[in-house]
Amino acid sequence: MSNVLSKPGPLIMGILNVTPDSFSDGGRYVSSRDAVARGLEMVTEGADIIDIGGESTRPGSERVDATEQKRRVLDVISTLSNEISDDILISIDTTLSDVAEAALDAGAGFVNDVTGGTDDADLMKLVATRNVPYCIMHMQGRPHNMQDNPTYEDAAQEVKAFLVEQAQKVESLGLAKENIILDPGIGFGKRTQHNLELLKQLNQICATDYTVLLGTSRKRFMGEICSTEDPAQRMPATCATTALGVSAGAKIFRVHDVWQNRQAADVSYAIKNSK
Image 1 (tube, rainbow, N blue to C red):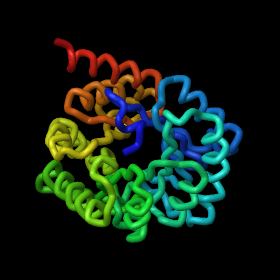
Image 2: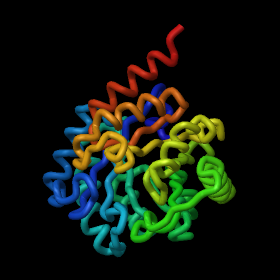
Image 3: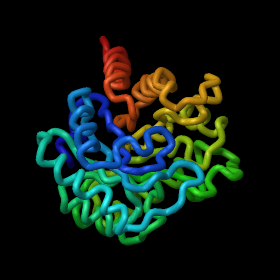
């Protein structure tokens, strides 16, 4: 198990999109120098994990091939890994085993797969062989069509069932249970009501005895509730879900706004564990 994942209390995963088209911060960190600087800044703000992605998965986005993903992320990962301490983990946000393997070789130590192992069958084999933390996310459809007409009879139970099935699959390949992370995929093939249902019943996913990651940062459903068009203005709403997630038992929080969510997570954790 990664020493980072065994830290007590909630962990903050800072989002570092090295893409021109991500929904909230696309184009801000396309140069390696700017991306590395932002990664270091997030560490000073309290991030435990830096999640680096070279392919946008916003609604309507198109695929980016492995060669281009590697061009975008590998230099950033390599440089950042040489400048941060061992108690900070670098994550590669990809669905492709080729990209993940190159990223692990460059200094990453965590794989974040938004398709939960359904895009590239070799990715589960890779993380099992390397025995590195692996995040399985639920998504109905794919980014280019996931918001066309997402439907569920029972969103919480269907998402939980998928996550547990995929977790057992990678565990059977040899990945240690403590290195398996489940992410309900807020905003990925879900309507606002589905997202709210998942958040309300998050404790059910946390009860599976796997580590749980929550990624709500600046998501559109909160903009609908708060009548806020600008994703960057949804930081307070994100902090509310982080506090809720800590109370429900989630461990990792994937966010754009690091220090603000660090505070929300730490205060919620202190309240939850007070005597």
